[in-house]
Image (cartoon, rainbow, N blue to C red; front, top):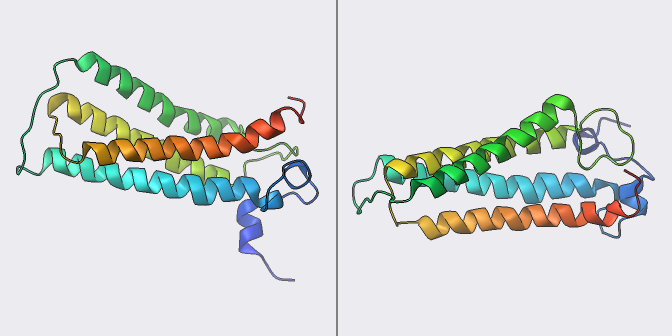
Length: 171
């Protein structure tokens, strides 16, 4: 048989916990599907929204610009976004896997890609929030907030699978 790029990227464990103990249609490919399709598409969407918002704040002069009166809230949000950017990087450096319940020794390529993309996305959000402390515009703000809500829903999908394994697997 030849080289299977999907199997090399996802590294599924045949007969593992994801295949036997989680009731879903993807079997051992479940963590790869949730990270690669759901989370990465969401992070790419949010990264594009952050780039668009940054361009609007810095380059466009067609709309009213304001200054934020209570910057402490934005600084708190910047800290949270920076923390969300730092955690996936720490997981990659230390080799900590959230979805590895079958005893694999290293991170799968999909986990590395997903973590780096998530970190880049949250770093871009932190940059947007920092720029918003200097100049703020109401245009497209709801689209940006929708993107962050969309990212939270995508994380909830991933955690739903992890929480189903919480009772089965001994941590």
